[in-house]
Image (spheres, rainbow, N blue to C red):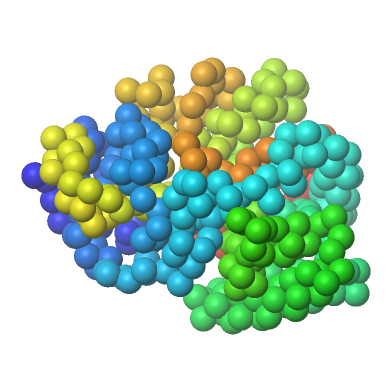
Length: 394
């Protein structure tokens, strides 16, 4: 049995280091699965290969999400929403909770919303170009925040407040600031859920608030927890992938030109940037019974962390994984999950990212960094806190 005593993968500073790709590749070559002794979460099985990561993610019965889907809760602690939130349930309960939200994120409705998303992305980029110097993290965040307000049908008079609270909840400089943002967002969501139970409309809050399982309405607390989780996922994934993707293209101007000149399609480029950035560094599961994984005995109750970033750079699954190939095909990356917990918002996230990147490519000739990028300290949504740039128009 191998123990990664020299490398704690849960150390958030690790992921911004330039030598990290080499370290992870070396660990993966040593073994597909390691026993990691973490500072905050105790012993965890770390899965680094694509094949074993896919094996864990596909088998929701054996590798459960109910005891937590992310590291950071602390050894032996179970999240508050266990068994009540989409992210913290297993099938069939997981399917029941996804059902009312599914229609809002399906490809058909997303295609119907594409024009509005495109127009909003263009407006955001044009404003940024007019300003000249911006923090791209802040600039790109405006799109998913606005789209999420549309899905929730946040009243016009509340939007400025909701976007401000979401800004703090998702962009706050410290965990305390972000927690304070959520503590403001949750009461607002609770108030809206209660209003729409009695006067439902066609928005996501109304559908969740009036949804029945076995003839019974979902508990109000469960509705609020799931809405908060949807908002977090919808905003964070797009924001971090957009900022990290643009940073990647800035560092590789030949790729920027290929996209501008139409040498590579946006759909394949998006998948490659999702693979490359892998902002959701890991996902957690708990073994529901004794089993074996890559020759290791996994005991019931053991926690198993799938390191998506590592799986997405596994040379056994991807040709030349340390290169950014915008036309890579096939590209079966795990950045949006796999199996029962495949990202419910994947079509919408791709539509938003495609609209943002397209608007940037059409209106910006060059992105010039004006200061150092600042990485956040997160192993949940790894990305940039700051990306100051000057946008030179086409």
